[in-house]
Length: 135
Image (tube, rainbow, N blue to C red; front, side, top):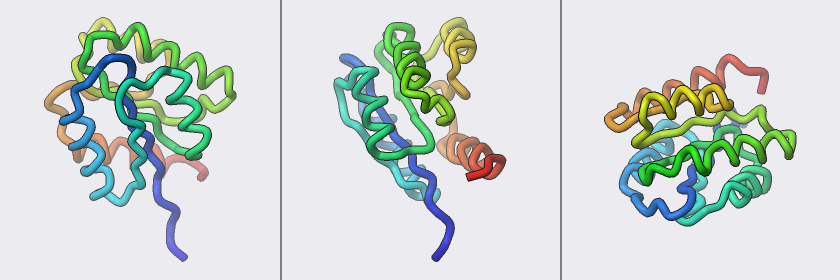
């Protein structure tokens, strides 16, 4: 029957409308054998968490290029805790200043991938997390 594919939800929050990066990541993760669900633009933290529940994903990836990461991402993490599904791997990519990255990691983000990160590095990080767990 084969191994179950890692399910990854990719999201763009708020008014961030830059889609090239998230599209490249989606294709790269699919090429790496993962199942990718892309929520589309103008998502709210609650919409992302509800999609994560409905799609039963393992990983939540948030692409942030608008500078609003400190406004939206902590709310996603809070909603994950409220829904008791904070065992998901949460990764963030895009334009994230170092100080915001540190604050996001302290709030519960598992990894930050800034502009220029190699897509293979992202897939490898997810795969390593997956392989270390009891899934």
